Length: 260
Image (cartoon, rainbow, N blue to C red; front, side, top):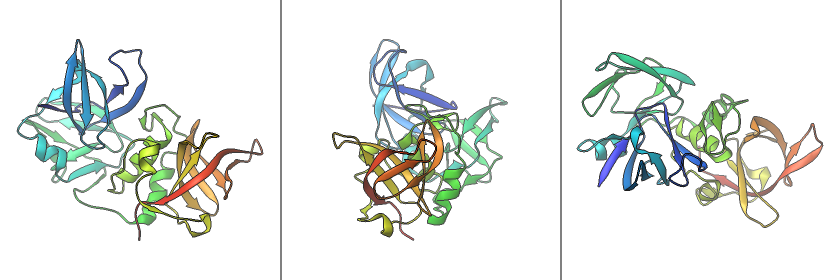
């Protein structure tokens, strides 16, 4: 079995082996994956972070062998900078990486991948560290006005479940990639009045299928990616968009991923 690691800012993952196929997610710097099969210039992979399958361009693969299990499962630092350079000390070059990038085994800003030595001089969450639940909202607000992008996981474009996943990663908590998967995690909270800031809210369509998620802020507000990352009013019916004077999403489920 072959394994790889993202040593670019991000790698788009597509539903089918075609550049015109929809992007379903992104692998960001430092995240690992396993190659399941190859087809022409494409490789079908499964990510180590959230077990998500899809197709990537083989030209973007950097293979990692002996170090894979350590890099994929060990504690790692997590970038807290929006867009920030990482330096390859080995190649004497630098490139930009997004928030949530992973730094396996980082120690005093230095980490090693394969035989390549990197340095990151920005803010990062140290390996194995989890922050308090009350930091979730600050992390979420840092994404305000980021544009909506199906399959996106960065400030340059993000979808609703990519937003919740990355925000939780920034506090040291791993959750699944898709809205329907996230809705299966955590503790169910029965009433909005019992929910706490940082809880995840889920919304369904007319067929009862969960299609949207966001993060409760408190004071009857929700932050979520809908067109762009925005703050709207929330009540037991759903999300109320003040400027249109209408409900845009119907509340279905409340989940608590992390307790105080």
